[in-house]
Amino acid sequence: MKVRKRRIIIGLVILVALLVAGGLFTLFQQPDPLQMTTLGLENLSKADSFAFSMTQQQTVAGNERQLTRISGYKSGENIHIQGQMAGSQVEMIKIGQTLYSKDPFSGRWLKYDDISIAQRVFLVELDPLATLQIKEIGEVVPSGESVVDESKCRVYTFKPSIQNQLIESFWSDFEYTLYITKRTKMVSKAEITALNKETKEPMKITLEFKDFNKKIAIQPPQTTN
View (cartoon, rainbow, N blue to C red):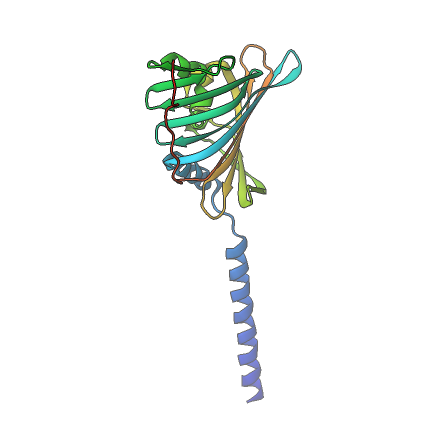
């Protein structure tokens, strides 16, 4: 009987040890980096609305300059941004295919019914997802964890090929770092570095996203000229 009890106890101890080991393995098992990156980008692109901020820094003649610092909202096809670009205050509202731009000197709103040229000039500003249009992600490397806007994130780094030909015509050697929230599997922050094709000097864009799928009303300005 004693031998039998000892065997039962040993069996139970082994069973508990296996269960604990299995639980720890599940707890610390990391998700597939490529799947997480793909899912995070898909969830971001499907979001109907969000708030965002963007900064762009670029090295010119050896000196680092902050070219853009804006914040804005996106709701469907409508976008409202404000901040600084190349040292000037800017505020623009895009409603469908109509663009409203506030003159920084007079404070008057100017209306443009054809925004094709403006979209080429302000591509990144008027489309916060433009730099995240990726043709092929490539190898994804886990880069630890971080906290963005009080949300725990997994961090992934990769060197993709870019879908947007306009961006690709000016920059090369892209490297992306994405911060993807553990709970919602959403990209909450993106850091993009690249080299100027002519000067080979570096550029960095930092995007942050929040308030996904909340009700955001973007209306034309009250007065236009």
